[in-house]
Image (tube, rainbow, N blue to C red; front, side):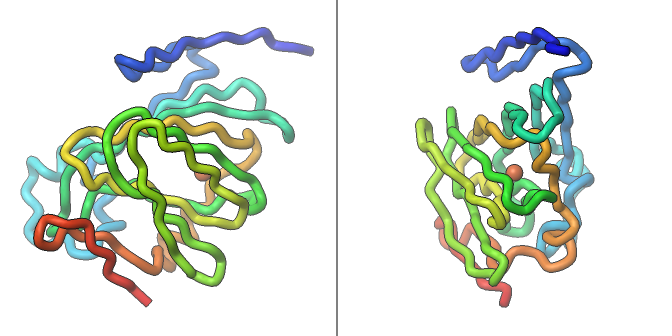
Length: 186
Ligand SMILES: [Fe+2]
């Protein structure tokens, strides 16, 4: 049976509104995500309480062939020099793909294949990114404003966060002499 559905997305305000059972909003503070950073010594409570990122997702159809739409708001900052970033993931159904479209801010889209080869794409307003299957993806905010990125992906893709939690990406980005600098992790 078809379930008619409609939501609104206010691009200027960055707000997704729709039916409660179709719109999900999640917020993670630095204390929620601290484990993914390289060096977490001496982080003040006010930094731990900062928002790392917010995600809003519009999901209507969970079936194979369905699509979902979402927005990530990645906040600016560093943890002992390492830029704020998203957790990053492969898709649980590994061949599923995704589009990212940047609305605001500046940063990097870090990509890594199953052989742990990594590369980045510059993310800036209007940049459009196609993420192929079997490629892990993470956003890194190298600017001083919120990085806002729209995404559209297969509803059944799922998230494999565990592989990244266990093995990490093969590179991290630090602010060194004011510039985004890759530090390879092996
Ligand atoms: Fe994804």
